[in-house]
Length: 322
Image (cartoon, rainbow, N blue to C red; front, side, top):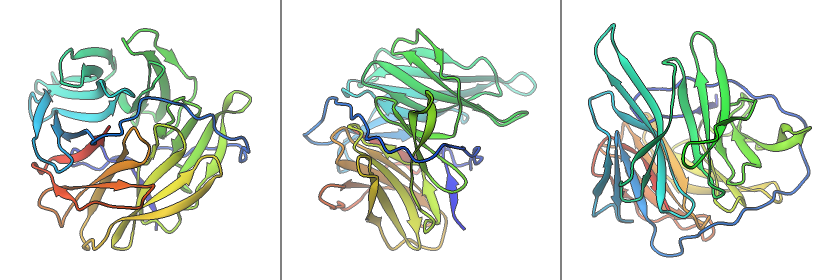
């Protein structure tokens, strides 16, 4: 039986979010954005619970550029590099105090790539509201989702400027996994598998652009648009292997690339990100068979998967690349 999961990487399972209903398949071709591209050595950033660490492509030379560790409840729930690689945004989660006087902090913050200039852009006013996916787009806008699971299930999507001003609601909600840089396309979870929505397909509202058949997958862990918008890359587990389904946005065809083989029978969790060149990516895997997580660098153009490196801390589940 296939399951679709989103892992916030703090060693707890997440609730499967609501299904999306869409209109029929749209035949238009995507308008591809252009942005800065790193053609040199990848710049990697590992999230260690509530710290952002820069590391080399071999997993060495680890340096903490941002530390938000206050107590055992501190963690970074999502992270996104700016398109030019000079800044990043992140979701800061904190809980302080004791029952019944607990204080929750859920906010989107921005910092320079070296951790300096850390500022708050947005803070959730309600303890029941959580921040989901965040995306730093090349036009200077920041996209993010919010959701509640109790007492009512709600999903909302928002935009704001890079300085936190100009907050705008998009007037619809969904379980968004990722959004293209130009926000013309959304990758969403549904009960039947991942779907790509065209933001303006149905009288200005999102409609179905492409539905990928991934019934063979046992577990699907998120997925991302490449920075140039040409591909969607979705990691999934099949048997004792982790693979990537690579969807060509122009042709709506796909290929499968093996990433990790020889998995054991225990539980495993994995997280994939693509670099700014749209070709190279990283996938990090953790689980019952791993004392510490491992990160693999791969290239969807050449099909090459480099030998993995072991991360320095057992709490590292997410590695990002520019």
